[in-house]
Length: 133
Image (tube, rainbow, N blue to C red; front, side, top):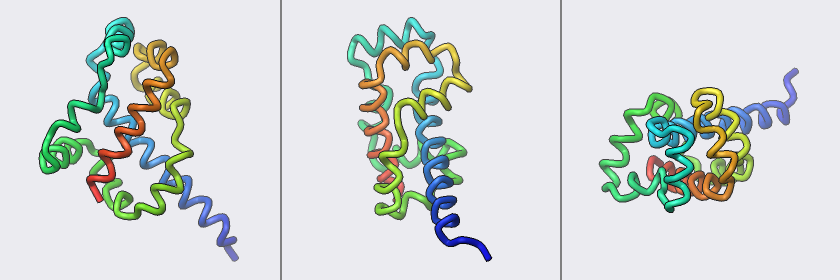
């Protein structure tokens, strides 16, 4: 017999990792062109990686986000606001930096130096994802 609490925990972790991967992919779309020094300067100048997407219409946002494979595969998860609210606190700047750094190590230093900036970007990415629901 399978423990139902295990299944609940497994589902929660699966949702968290899926949504976190989507957030990393959204940030990667915005940050991958930068060197660590370029990203550092952009952050200091008040640039936002996600704000340019926010300026698009909802249909344009869906089109851009829909071009990201992880967003397409996880799109069904964004229709459950209560589940997203439950896992939202589990997606931290540290977990995003860790996953992002594996794929884009050149930006790691700048991201680690600006955890508040990254926290703001994560919040903006979560708001964008809510448009997919």
